[in-house]
Image 1 (tube, rainbow, N blue to C red):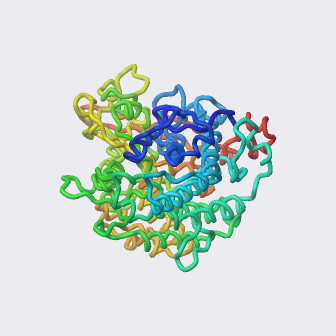
Image 2: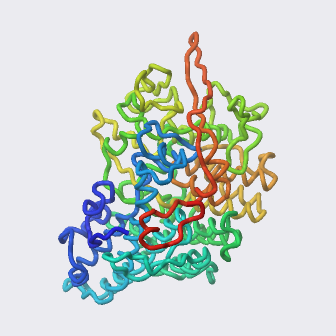
Length: 613
């Protein structure tokens, strides 16, 4: 691990403007900022310095948009393809090159980044009890902040270890302050079991373990800020870790541990995963938006409610600017301008194309009435394809699906997530016909799939000749995920009707009228499970879930090695014609379920690398 000073306080002292501004995150908390570099004794000799040292840990939360050298993690899945080829997923994940510098910020830098974050947490936990109270603070406030900061550090330490686990498996658990001038993990060569790493450490740290006694979690959760505390002071506390955030992370983890890839390696069962998701729903969830609890976002007064309900669930902030009741935990960034979205904006708008949704994803959306357009879906949630025609193998009789206009009469979440030929956005209408506005001849960044991304792209930024600004906070947990967790765990437990009822609100939110329990094609458990996986994919598309879901379902070798489809749109005698095409061939081998541990760490510490690397 890199031998550098760890006592940084500002985002610019770590990786520049790509990280969160603590001032934007916590209002006036950081009005008086110390030097970027202080000794450890100086940091912990002053309560103000210690606070700033702790708040800087929030800067280790990463934004998913353009995280991998200007590309997205979902461009390493079957959901999208990156238009430009000079770096990112195109030169790494997609061709099976996990050692390239073109995606180093994901494949190698993750290791150091999160271990640095863990070291900050351990340092705070080791020293904060000895930090003197500020003279202008009350004893009550001091004791409250002391309790909360320690709990937040424990949450962060668990979260960082979990993010490392997703990529590298069970690696050393570090709970003491390591010497930054040494080899850091040299004394931690032995890799724990999954149970030791996830169940005995992470879940215990968050909620006290797998079983939650009498519906009262333990761990760090009781000492974190309550939902009521944060909601009463969103301007100053928005974005802080809360009790619901700890339970949401635990819910995600238990869902993963019950899944096929990890089943039996811990004591977590599908029933445990269902019970924990239900605990969140009962404790923090609501069917409405007026009782200060979490619910699905629903706007009012919009001309196109079904689409905008979903679109604004992503773009509306959870702070006092928007008060989105769906967002549980997010990276609370400053307002963004044109530079933040230029890489993923259609070339006709002056952007670089960037994240381009695949036809594979388009095919996963249901019809506008809530019925399925295709007759068969596999265990990845995708339609089963005819390899000769590149089309789903069967169209449901009587369906309004039109392969020559594939985005017509579809689930409104498609319209809210994807820019397709003929839709309005920015200063004009998307036109991907060869040689036209968004597919000009000679522009290497024009969409290869026939589509551009709309989700997470604030259209307000385009106003006034791209001089507009808007919040573009990255969502880490939202209430929709909890409902999906609950539904999947119920379905895996054999409770199909209850599982379908659990996610019906997601469908109701966007106006899909056909009730899931009335669909004849979802009566059997396997078909219902494949549907729930498809529903999870379209609801959480481009939110950095697909790559990890496919791995935990143990189907990544099928989904991440499949061809990526797109469409060529042409006009003949005044009629549009859509022709399917292969835009990318992907590589995925069994060893790629995990990343290789960075070579420098293996050479330096002697830690065992992951199988196959």
